[in-house]
Length: 188
Image 1 (cartoon, rainbow, N blue to C red):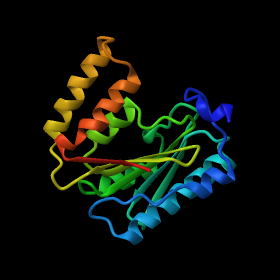
Image 2 (image 1 turned 120 degrees about the vertical axis):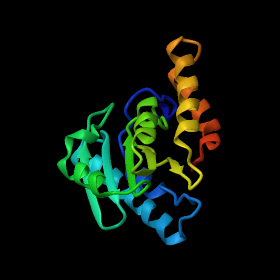
Image 3 (image 1 turned 180 degrees about the vertical axis):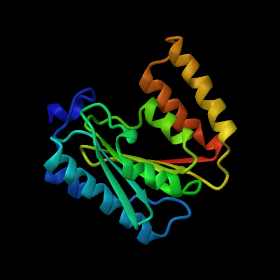
């Protein structure tokens, strides 16, 4: 229980965490698609536990047809380390790619995650599944407006750089306001 209360260190993945990963409903996605994403989250946690010491793992998905798996460390995973991920991005249209990854702590998105999500037009969904099985999803809706989302992010990031707000406060503020840029945020 003590490990569950602290959010700044690695939580080891358990069978309970994998089983508790919920189906999160995303607008414009069928129930089957949402259930498939939940299955991918469970598989991701299992791979992170069994093959990567509960550290970060990233799935780059192009529908259900193509998947690239990238292994990271406790604090990050580098999208650029995979030729197969590059191949997926090269052939994808805007909002065709899903990035699913775990966070060994119980934190949701990082500012770096948000930058990647905004930077690549091909990314339609980005999720974080914590090592305790909680899910956070960002989805670029058909109303996504890159310029509005970028302005929102930059105004928040400026406050973070000026030490007006902390990293976690900046993330929370972005998630609260991201609908202004056509981004849907949901968590389990």
